[in-house]
Structures are given as C-alpha cells and as structure tokens.
Image (cartoon, rainbow, N blue to C red; front, side):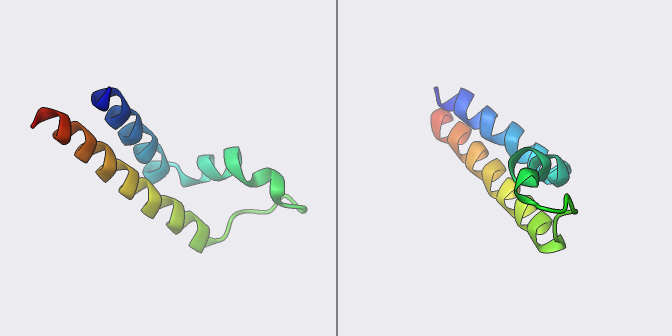
Length: 66
C-alpha cells in the first residue's frame, strides 16, 4: 500500500511542479469572476506544495523498503 500511495504522491507532486497552471484551472479557476490568470505567488505556492508532496511520496516508499 505504501508503494502505491508514495507513487501517487510523486506523480501528483510532479504535475504540480511542472504544470501549476493546470492545477489552478482544475481547482480554482471557477472562483475567479473575471476569468483572469492566477497570481505569481499562488503559482509558486503550488510548486512548493508539489515539492513537499514528492518528498512525502519518496519517504513513503523508502519507509516500506526498510
């Protein structure tokens, strides 16, 4: 189970790292009244959370190996 969860976290984290605008369109674009673009800070925050998710996934996989 830990391998599957770790792999899932790594994949989602990688998407957040490489394509933060896609994550914004999926999760928060509908909240905008004028259909504008996300702020730079928000995109950077998505990237940071993606990095943390990837680290969590790697740790989950490593925990199952030990």
